Length: 345
Ligand code: AHG
Ligand code: MN
Ligand code: MN
Image (tube, helix red, strand yellow):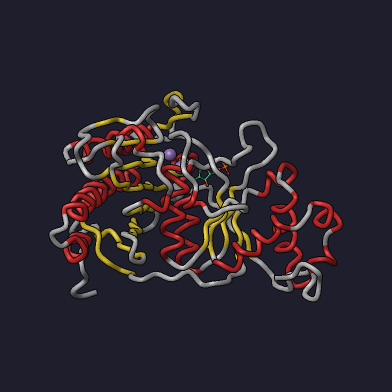
């Protein structure tokens, strides 16, 4: 490819002389630089001392792998030099207040999909950039719609960075020769409807009725009320599922379920669901809990979990519709959802 814009060139064009946008630009550049270093570690694996071994637990009780700890340190080192009011990480108990007078705050999941590290599967980094509120302690208690920018990196066969500044979605690919990200996709649009779903189906018996009804409809395929055959994928890394959905559409679900501790699903609102929802909406898709828009939710706490259903807008709307149907009707099932049925949308 000739004359491809680098991430830096692309950001220069966006930032102009506005101080807030300049701060966002510097933070994105630092996160991208950190991602190059994390990408090196994921590629070298055991040669760089990365084995995927558990190192203990973070303060929220999650098992911490070696790469979780290394990635967190790399990102904190990269961002710590910048004018940033507060940082929050999946791996830190509380937010870290750095420079309360600075205009932006950054929340991140340093390493997403850590159960995939030692199986040579895609993992990633997710980030969300917020404006600094008057009380910096409330930096990460703002609705997702307040985000200035959000992005994620996938460390897969290619290392890709997906970014929104609230004006569409761009995809950058790491050029390993120059060690910089280059623009390889702009104004990404998620197809409005697609026939691929992603959910951890081993939890089926714990799901609520609306989720079970939706997935049963997918599984019934052309013989069922939806009338279309579906394909299924489950990678176990939110970043990889999100990237696939940006490229070819479909729906991802990590709903709440009846297991202890999974009432609100597994994913975290501040540094997983909010940034993903921002990106997906900016690409024309939808992101919902099933009952409400993810970007409208104001977090109560830094590590709170939230059900996340995201992807092609029509698929997400169909799932939301299932949540409006009374349970008794869902229980009675199929005929009500037929093409000519009572509840068809
Ligand atoms: P993390 O590694 O940051 O804790 O996140 C893992 C998340 C997400 O990437 C993935 O979609 C989900 O956990 C997988 O959960 P299950 O193991 O329950 O399928
Ligand atoms: Mn994660
Ligand atoms: Mn993580």
